[in-house]
Image: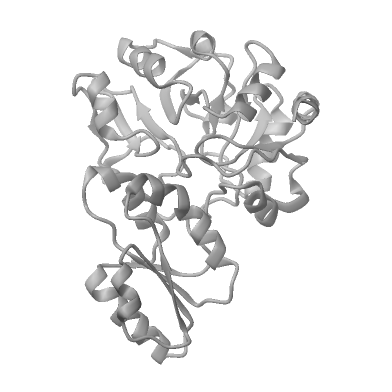
Length: 324
């Protein structure tokens, strides 16, 4: 792997693009100091140029190199959760080009907690950084394996570093410091309760309808498979599947309920069981969506998860990925 990381670092220095693993999802990276490489990310992903990228670097001591006017609360979260699935939205330093931030004066910063990602960043050297959104087409399912990246982006990426399946499988939590109170713009790999504990409760969840900052992964439609996806309560999901199959549509039911296997079914309904616990469920969610999106199904039906903070991130992703 060391030789592959050295090759990847050289590709980045020369203006190439590299897909690499993190603990959350695979990222599509470019050196932030090379404008043509950053532009290539937007082209590969078919991503709007006003939609900002997250900047990845290797050590908390570099935070002041990339941001300015850093509040104490941001330092507390960085020191507690980095490396880890936390992105901080701060005022950018002049070392961050606006092409990376979508024209905004703020930037998303994080240190990933994955040995391959950290080795790559350290090989690039001090005060270097990689701009990296998820390694997929814009608005589609995030990749959690190298195979997902290859299947969706193919040879448009100069190199794919295979670091195995992502340990968390859902994107980072994004916290903004543009208001008086730190605000979660996107729930993610770090739960709300864990952030609140570090900040003595001084953190809030953003109102999706009043968001003013452009932030990765917060469009109303996002994380979506190409196969239409619907979410339904457990008491209604099987009836919906029967309605669809009566129309001749092949349907997958993704459920946490073992008793679903006792329901009447037919050859056009496939039932797939997911873990009951939210951390394990989150790790498998995108892999399950990739699995069934590449088969000849007409509709994906997912049982609505519980409506509590433990399932906040998963509910957010499913709402954005679904038709309903």
